[in-house]
Length: 267
Image (cartoon, rainbow, N blue to C red; front, side, top):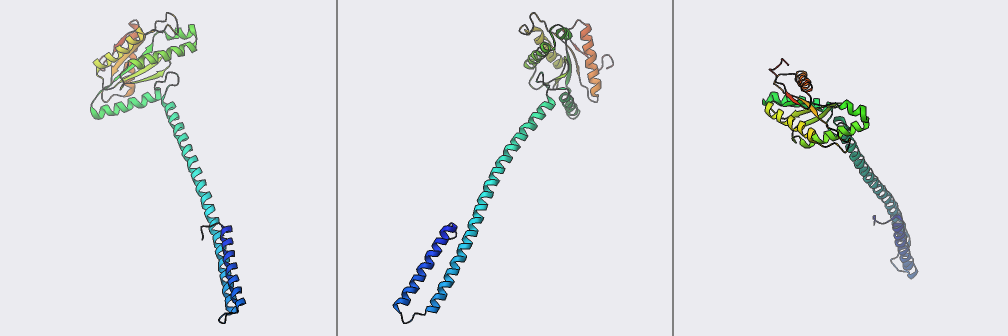
């Protein structure tokens, strides 16, 4: 009864009251000897009042059900909107996280990400007693490219250079743009032999690469200073040693990889 609409409940109540009243009138008209008009009228009034109260309760319950349905739809809509907003927020945060550690031009990791990663390698090296190689890479005569062909062309050359290095490095090593035309390579668990081999592979790959689609007859080379982290060293010491190795590579005529040991030359 209470699942009906208020109009249906009122209609049924009115029908019942009318039928009951008609039966009372029929009994009174027939003149039944046991018929008591006052008692039957009181019963009819009580029934009608009960039906009226039931109709009111039905209308109230219908209103509650309607509000609950509206609230449910609203909650579902808000839940869907919240889920969509959360997905957009997660995407935006992931994008911001990616931008925070990525060099926009080359798509490689940036200086901040390199510093965070190299400190992680240093901590791991202290705990696991494994060293790792650090290489600084500097494009030879890159200033001439910018001065002659402009910075936009220079940016395209940097991106192409990064693509060559990315394609020729080990998948578990770490390559980053340190700034300008300088790049850094972390050779995971690399001793001097492994670090030199990885650096030489990159140097040769760049020297053999064809950049003629960017600049006709462009011969691009890179000088590399390599070293191996020793437990207990600071990052400044390691980078200074790799930087000194790069200067030696430049003095040696460029397009050279120089390995500098911790016990060679004081740095």
